[in-house]
Image (cartoon, rainbow, N blue to C red; front, side):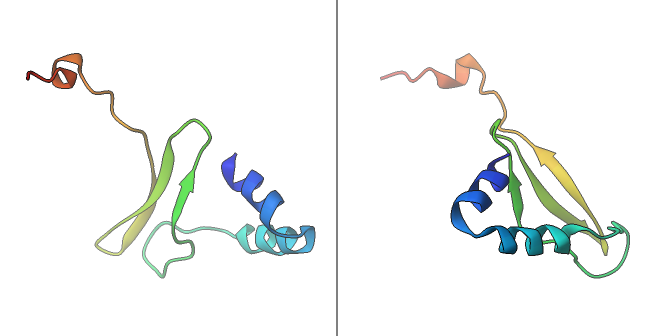
Length: 76
């Protein structure tokens, strides 16, 4: 996972332990306040982003769509 590799390269082990400890909680995706923010990037090029609608929240896994060949052709 990219996050793990970045953490290992950029901060010391005690900071990694503190970071992981903060992630160890019961996450309620229903109504309430945000617990996590941002985007999670994966090594396969996909990502997860936080989605919120009308007070409810969840994480959505996304990937870049495949572009059809007919859209790639450019006439000059």
